[in-house]
Image (tube, rainbow, N blue to C red; front, side, top):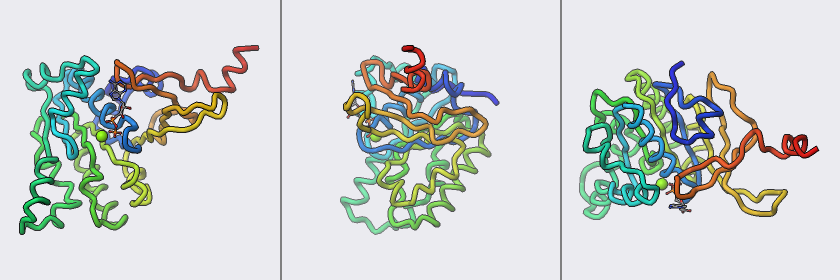
Length: 244
Ligand SMILES: Nc1ncnc2c1ncn2[C@@H]1O[C@H](COP(=O)(O)OP(=O)(O)O)[C@@H](O)[C@H]1O
Ligand SMILES: [Mg+2]
C-alpha cells in the first residue's frame, strides 16, 4: 500500500506514513497539537506534490498562517503554486449564529457531505479541522451513519484524509468515530510515573495493515512543530535493558 509521509519523522519511521486514500482520525484536548499536526501534514503533503485542501471550522486562515510561520513553514508558496488551498467555515458559522438567520442550521449540522461538495475534483489530501464543530445534537447513531458515509465517500474519491475531532465531542459520541476510520491517533498529556513531570504523549490507537506500537509515544511541540521525543525504543523496559 502506498504511504503518504506525515511530516512527523518519528511517526513516518514507525508506520511508514498514512495509507494512501484512507482516513485517519486525530482526537485530543484543546492545546494538544491537533491543528499543528494538521498543518504539518498539509505542508508535507504539498511537498510530496499532492493537491491539498485544509478545511478549517474554528480558526481563519490568517491564524493558521501565523501558527505556521512560528515554525518557519512557508505555506504561502504552496498556496501560490496551487498545491494548497484553505476552505474557511469558521466565518460562516459565526455569521449564521450572530444573525440568527432563518436558514435551517440544523440541516447544516452533521451534513458532512458539505465538506465533500466543497472539495475540488482533483483533491488528493484533505485535513478537516475540526469536525466536532459540525456534530451538534447528533446522537451517536446519527453521527456514526453520517461519519461512515463521509469516510466512504472520501475513500471512493481516493482522498487521504486527516480528520480532527476534539476529545470533548469524541467522548460525547462515545468515541464511536474511532471505529469508522482506517487509523486513529489520540493526543494527550499525562504525568510521567518515572519523572513525575507532565508530558505530551500520543497513542496510535490503530492503523490497519500497519504494525503499531502499544506504548505511548512522547512528543514535544517546539520550533519545528511536532517532534517525537521517544517511542518504542525508549520505553522504560527497553531502556532498562540498555542500561545493564
Ligand atoms: N511556536 C511554538 N513553540 C512551542 N509550542 C507551541 C508553539 N506554538 C504553539 N505551541 C503549543 O501548541 C499548542 C496549540 O496547539 P494546537 O495544535 O493549536 O492545539 P489544538 O488544535 O489541539 O487545540 C499551544 O497551546 C502551545 O502549547
Ligand atoms: Mg485546533
